Length: 294
Image (cartoon, rainbow, N blue to C red):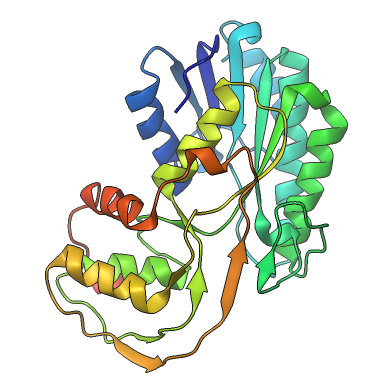
């Protein structure tokens, strides 16, 4: 990772989420000289980013030490796919975070968006036009538009994230269910389509990409996805090798859907091979959890 930066403070929303925790871990490892300021969510005694008063509350709390050397990563999000309320929550959070960043004079601001702003397709180029087909995708696109409307173009980044592999207590993504199950003392008899393929990123890889955009003030819109396209069958084999045991998962078929997102040219140099990244993620695994959390 490049360290060409004069950023001295990183402000982070969504700090208690899976991605937010990874950003703090990677920042401590690669940028120990940068002060990380987490903006806790309301459920953790912090700020409700949907509240009409939140911009004034953030300005009054003065979490920014020196705006000229501060960067913001807005990773907070509501991830419901089909609830109508997600439209209001994600667009309001983005608009309020961007408004606060502008009024506080924060040097550079990164909005964590999603590849859900594109139409579902087998292959999606990094410069594809936006055509979301879920309410979640619409909400993230609305957040992007708010980010662009409220902040100067050369002071903002938008990172459209592909699926993220990481440790969660209650994972929604099937690959993350398998990941959790691989460390469980009582793994489930899950079924999978061996030919399904994705180019997901791990939490640590995603965090490195977002930090690169923030601390180097890389403006523009970027698609963040994994370097390698991996089948679900290959993923299962790698997990069994890392766990040093056979897992009670059953191959349902050799087929499956392909979903590949082409990483942006600016992101490609930051990516490594999938097996390396998965091993890194495995080495940072939590203590074994019961399958009852899946």
